[in-house]
Image: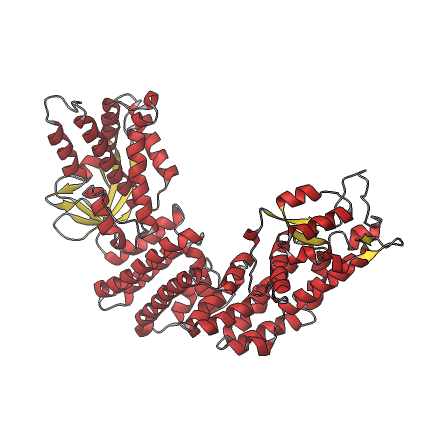
Length: 589
C-alpha cells in the first residue's frame, strides 16, 4: 500500500481502465470547480519549464483483475473532470482542424486527435473510465463516444456531466462570444501538456472491504458528501461484511438507488433536495428525535440492534422503503389536490414525515390521503400563523409514531390544539389575528384567499367560481383604514388614530383586505367614501363589496370605517379562521 509517484499520461497508459464503484458518490462538481480547474491549468502554463510541476493530488485505487481494470476509491471527481475536459478539448481541436488549422507539425490532424482519444477516452473499444453504474451508459455515450443525440439527463449527476462538457467547450473556444479572449491552439495544447505532465500519488488496495472503509474516511475529511451518499457508502460496507453474495447484493442495492436518483432528478424542479426527503423518511420511521449526523440517533443506531444474520434483509427492506418514499414524494408533488397546494403554500416541513407515512398506509387510496392532508393543513396553518417558538416536532412525535389510521391522526392533532398549555390553541390563534400585520404579514393573502372562496360559496351566483390570488393583478394587502405617514393628515371617514386604535385596530385582520396593485396605488390615503366606491366598482372580490356591511354611521348618517366597523369585520374573520382551521372530527372522518 505504498504510494507510487506518477503522472497523468502514465496513469492512463495503454489498456489501463478505471471504474467508479457502486458505493462512490456520483459526479458532483459544478461550475465553481470547473472554473478553478481551468484557472489552475492556465496559471501552470505561465510557469517556467523547471517550475512547471502541477500536482494533481492523491488517487486511491483497488485493482479488480490483471487486465488493468481498477476501481477509483478517491479522486474520481478530478479524474472524471479530466476525461470531460479532454473530450471538450478534442471537440474544439476537431472544429479548428475542420477550419484548416494544422494542429501539430508533421502529423495528420485526425491522427493527432485520435491519439489523444486512445490515451484518455477509449482504447481497443473499451472506455478508459466507467462512471458510477446508474450514470455509466450516459457518460459513455456523451463523453467517451461523443454522441450528442441523447435523451435528457435522468439524474442530477448526468445533468452535471452534460453541463461540464458544455462549459469546457465554451471556455476553450470563446471565439463565438468574445474574440479578445479566445485561446490560440498553442495555448490549448500547452494546457493539455500541463494535464499530461501533472504529478499524482497513486495508492492501491487489495481488499474491497478496506477500499470501502477508506472511501468513507477520505470523504469525511474532504468536501461534504450528501447524507444520501453517506448512507449508500455505509450500506455497501455492511454488505461486504455480512453478505454471503456481495456482488449480487450490491447489484440489487445499486438498481434501487438508480431509481432513487432518477426521482431526485425529477424532484429538483420542485426545489426539493435528496437529503430533505431522506430526513423526512427517517423521521417517519424512527420519530422526530432522529438526527442524521448523530450516530446515536440515526439509522446506524437502529442497524446495530439487528442480529448479524438479519442485517442484510434489514438493508433490503430499508432501501426498498426509501425507494418507495421517493416515488411517493414525486406522486405527491404531481397530485392534483387542493389540500396539497395548501400544504405547499404553508411550507411547514414537519408535516412531510406524516405524508410519507400516509402513503405507506394508504398508497393508491386518494380519498384517504386527502383526509390526511386536510388534517395536516390545520396544524400546519396554526403553526404558520402563530409563529410560535413552541417545539412542534416534540409535540407531534407521539402522533406520528401512533399514526396508523386517519382517526388516531386527527384525534392526536386535535389534542395538541385543544390542550390549554399548547402553543396552537384557539386563544393563540385569536391573539395572532389581532396583530397579524406586525407578527405574520406573509400569511394574510393565504387567509384572505380562503375567505374569498368562503364568501363565494355562500352566494348562488358565485358558488363554484373558485378564486386564486393570480386572478387579480399583482395582489397586495391593503389597510382599509390606511396607515398614515408621520405628520400626514388623516382623511375623512375614519376615526381618530389614538393609541388604542394603533395598538388594537389598525393592524388586525379586520382592517386588511386583498386588492390589486393598481387599485391599491389609486386608493392610497383617500377618504373612506371614495375608497368604498372603488371597492364596489371593482366587482371581482366579494370581500371588498361586503365591506359596506360592517360600516358604522356618523351623526350625519355618513358611512364610517372606525373601531366599531373594524371590530365587527375582525370578529367575522376570526370566526371564519377558527371554523375553517379546527378539527371537526366527524367531517374529516
